[in-house]
Image 1 (tube, rainbow over the protein chains, first blue to last red):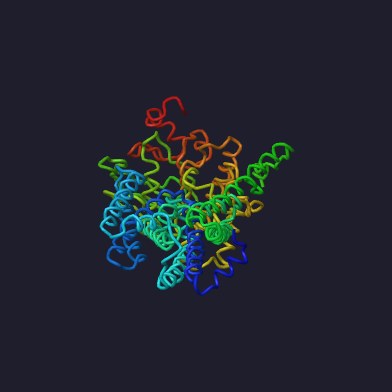
Image 2: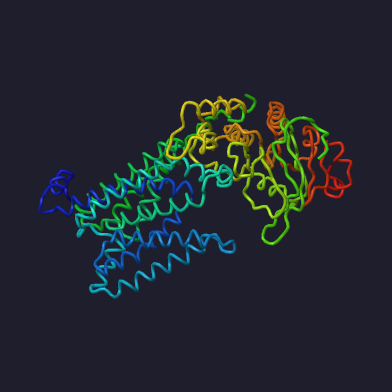
Length: 299
Length: 245
């Protein structure tokens, strides 16, 4: 196994430039996913994240077959599918999750059919589904950095509107917020974050980048502001550690990154200072009586 | 409507022959009433009577099939800042990682404005609202740690943060114990006395009879509208609630 120092040497080795590019793309996309994912987790829309991840697949496949820009292709397919979900879900007879279930499976199926027309079908399919650290063109590195920055800016600019809608949709409507438009923007942001991340982490596992670091951060804090910093930090750390392990032990990169992120989650679940299993057990054992909040009722 | 109560106080909400049709069903039919500054009105009626729909029409959230509805002289939905809405407690995501004061600030999201952060003035208004409902000591607390009564107060403070002329509350007493209900009733009474027009839907008839200036009894149409003593004596009361009251 390589030491972290060896890893650093490899990163700056001009013959291994793809490794440095993979690191930049993996860390940047995890950071973006952590920030967008915080809203995904707080809204309880992990399922939508999963749907979007599948929905970008036909776009990637078409772009791949036509030798076009993968990020652009995926973004177009994802946005079309999310808009369709939002529109069809307005039908009161169908719950949103059914609509999503239909559309994302259909999109994924379409992607598989399209990519089967490409030469070298099995290899490219595997690369899309499970990610890869080789073959990232320079233009994609730029796209990920610029696109990622744009996504983060929009999330921060619309942060308080997303929070108001996430807290209470009906009151947000009563205040005159355009709830439907804000939902749409959030879906599109999720789509873009997914597309940026698909290259390294793969289509199947990208959901983990959205959900796992944000859920871990939620266990660690009751402050939204802190959560929005901790989630991307944990995501990028997972990407860094995951890529290092993947490179030095020769493991698949997407799976390794996700397992590292999951490790952080389990750690937080056990040891979070307030909400963790250990803290709760200790509180029970020492019978530490938390002053009841109710006592301040009359203040 | 005859000027029985608070004659001279301005109408802040006037509902004139309003009919609402939802999914082909007439949910409200020819409803006429007014709401004046300083009034504390209880909106009562059996389940499915259209109480929540009436609140939502005043908010401009449901289309009106016939009649007219004016809030501060304008169409509903147009006077953001005129109405403070307090939804049922379960509408709010209490598991959200947000403090009391920041939750209250979301009531001013439109006043703060798109792409902007709250200014000193916004915080002053929010802190005044938090103080008004008696939660100043808890304003940094995550909302998830609050009791039912405190949560209800957070929602009232969020509505007050708009500086509204009208407060609309949907079943604020549901799930609260009796002492907490009393405290909340006192708060709403005081807010009305301070010049808000307060309209709440409620199932707690005895409390409504005791504290409200006026009861509006509806069952798709208005069955009775007047001081509690008059309304409880009217025929519709018995028909709607039987032995409950």
